[in-house]
Amino acid sequence: MGSRLLRKLCFFLLFFSVLLSCSAESENKKIDIFIAKSNNESENSTAEEVDDKEDGSADKIKKITVELAITSEEQQRGFMEREVIPEGTGMIFLYKEDRKMRFWMKNTPHPLSIAYIDSSGKIREIYDMKPYSLETIVSTHSCRYALEVPQGMFKRLGIEVGDKLTTESLLLIKRQFY
Image (cartoon, rainbow, N blue to C red; front, side, top):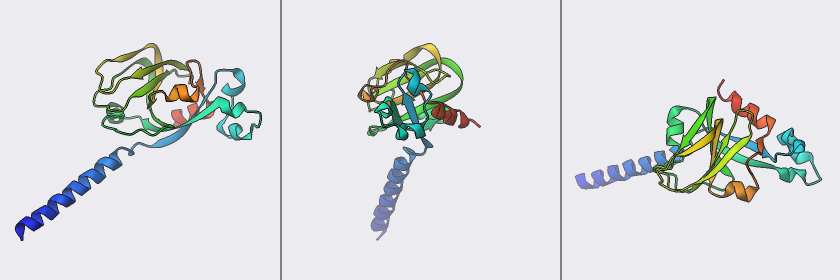
C-alpha cells in the first residue's frame, strides 16, 4: 500500500513539474510588433494602415508576435531550453539605454537569427546563431533592442538591415518600461 501511494505521489510531482516548465516558456508578456521596409512610404505607417492598403504595400510591413524580455532574469533566460519556437514569433530584449549588445546560445537548442535595433527602431545588424554555441555575437553599433526569431525568419519575411519598427510598435515597446 505504501509503495502505491509513493508511486502516485511521484506521478503527481512529475506531472506538476512538467506543467510548470511548460507554462514557464510563455510567462513573458507578448505583444505584436510591425517591421516596415526602409522606404519612406512604409516607415511612417501604422499597423491599422496596413490593413487599409489595397495596392500591395501592406506586404512591406511584417508582423511578429514577440515575448518581452525586460527584467535581467528574463533576458538571461531568453530562449534557453526551448525546443520549439513557432514561425512568426520571437523575443525582444528591451534596454533603457543604448549599448553594445552581446548574445550567445548557451543551453539554447533552437537555431536563431538576431537583429540589433537602435533607439529609433532601425535594424542595424542581423546575424544567424548556432544552437548551444558559446560564441558571443557582439553588435558593432550601440543599440537599444535585440530581436531573436527562428533562424532564417528575417529572410523568409524579407526583413533586412535598414528596415524599421513602425512608429506604433516603437511607442508600444517604450511604454513597457513605465
